[in-house]
Length: 133
Image 1 (cartoon, rainbow, N blue to C red):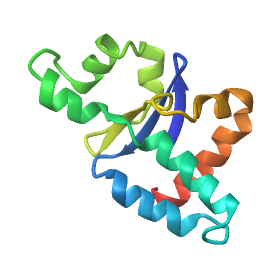
Image 2 (image 1 turned 135 degrees about the vertical axis):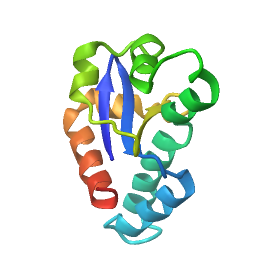
Image 3 (image 1 turned 90 degrees about the horizontal axis):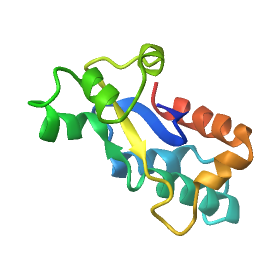
Image 4 (image 1 turned 135 degrees about the horizontal axis):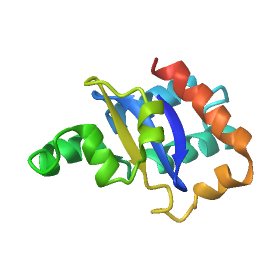
């Protein structure tokens, strides 16, 4: 898994079998802090709020738009407004999806965390790489 910023929105490249509840369970296992501590709770809050309202774009494409667009890439280009440079830089095969992270749908405004310091996004991606390869 990897979070990337495209057009002022955040997306996550994930395996098709991504499941929010399983994801949160794995996050709890890899947080390097004492369970119940401020660091543990805050880390869990960031991950849970960031991924809670994520839209699985491949599922949306297959359920709603497969008849309208020739391919998933065509859907991303036309519906999500990814340009050709963005699409060529993404490795998305049939076993991967893109999650559109709706991080501002909660009261914590997680987007500010990444806009303030780019290093925070790098740290987040290090944790995600440890969970999903």
